Amino acid sequence: MNSKELKGNWTELKGKLKMKYAVLTDNDLMFEEAKKEEMYGRIQVKLGKTKEELLKIIESI
Image (cartoon, rainbow, N blue to C red; front, side):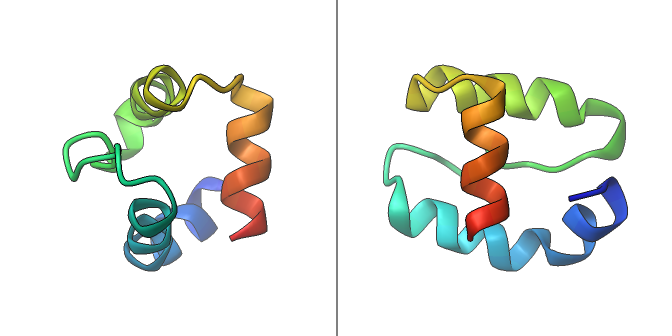
């Protein structure tokens, strides 16, 4: 999923991620184009997943 697709669908994806993983907060899922990698890092730490696993989760939602 490219950045434009991610940004366009982020509100919906964020809600689904929060429902599936209650440990995630709005701050963890705050999307800013310039800080996308930082956001991925926060989510990875909270979920204990690799970046590849995280991207698969996001794409599957």
